[in-house]
Image (cartoon, rainbow, N blue to C red; front, top):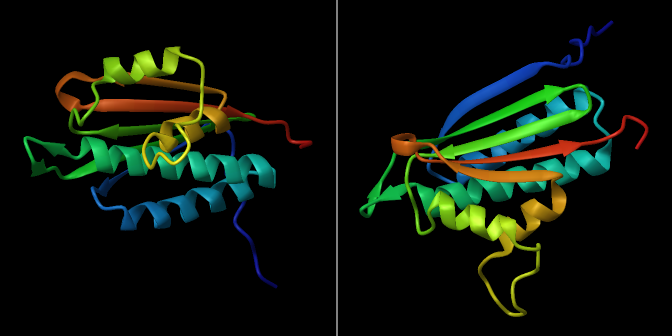
Length: 156
């Protein structure tokens, strides 16, 4: 008889620093999706969380992992699970192309899709569409922090 580990309980926090390389994002996403599955998060919000997490990390790596054209060490990813709420936090070490203030201004406007044919701007749009709350802060010398919150019902 195989004994299964108990499902992660509410109040769990996972935090990890990953290199500024998008190859690591896929593994981290698979890990978090497994945690969410064990926690009983239904499939649709689990998929939405996974996509939002991927976009947050990819944007952080692409736009926030360089300062003065020098590659920086990594990004910090954090996930907290409390009752029927997941909070994702991605911190990158740089200032990137956009300041936290620029991103906050973008978040204060209505969420509209990028222009047709545009290859840029889809990440923030997707994260805002999939998550209940998104905010960006400048953490001084520590970089930019993007925080997103998703709520769900166990009966979904």
